[in-house]
Image: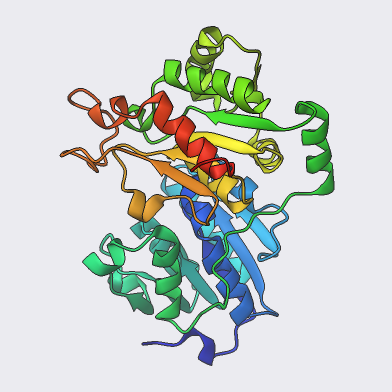
Length: 343
């Protein structure tokens, strides 16, 4: 094992992942970096969407946006970004992103120590390579990132995911959300349609949450879920507020943090809510619940073990049986349990 902690380290670059859910699952590892290097200046590099998660985060000092679809597009854009990183004079790069691009970026920026998993053909670009095999791939993603750091001597006593909100963001949620307790229905999943439960069943669950528990209903999601949000709102008998496509990442975080319950597909917002300790029911189909389940103890997972799951496909090539077999009653039973009213 090559120990990252044996040399003086003042400035650390952390290249986080490109998906919101995965980035949330790196936060215990980010805490490990902060605990190991308490006086270092820690800079998170992220795409424009994920960068918002780390604004005002207690375990990093700065966020630098890498926008490969905008100002950093193409080879010239990458080189401009690398030149910026070179000027920052980092002592160490920790690469949670598995792509070779992250290693190329750190190498060209002249960062002397570069730690990450040996993935995507990048072994020669890493000074602190960590082998990855079936055992590592079977870990929950949160443990996957922690394991990589532990192999480099970077550890933590806590394994809690955490995100942070400013007072004004909390106040925004208080002003825009219903008075009293409310449940968030999150019907989207950025990875693909195979991860999405049936809109009419989300609507039926939401109606019952109003009747049984007196919860108000908020529909939440990104612009890509606008149509499914309209379908759910149309199918519901009870009133709801539809915030799908109407919040940025920071507002979404504040909305979820204020909620009393979340009903969700396997998605980025699911992990955001878990980081805030929100009780939830998470519906899994084609993805592996053992590696990407919500972290913590306040979640119930609903799934049916079918012969083709987990397939990890974006679109189902057959009859979507893993999701079709999840019933409204399955989800309501799990909701009762997570709310403390189950058997």
